[in-house]
Image (cartoon, rainbow, N blue to C red; front, side, top):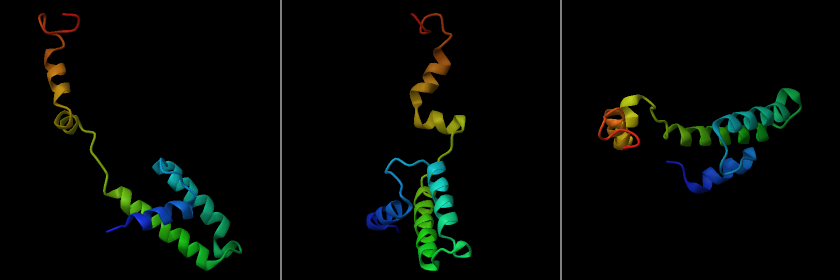
Length: 96
């Protein structure tokens, strides 16, 4: 289990805001990897920290994957099912 302290450390290590998107996370990781890679004169310790921080964040967000299938959306939002069923109804439809 990832602690809040670990997550904060990882976020700060990668220089991310609290609202960072997955694309921003990947971009920050790639940029830091290029700058700090041992093959380019960077420190192996710093690269290890960057890799660890990235793994912590990716492990954390992977637990929040969700499905956007129609079935799942209807389960999460039952009102949308009612709307889909009644939207063309002459009595309950739009503007009635």
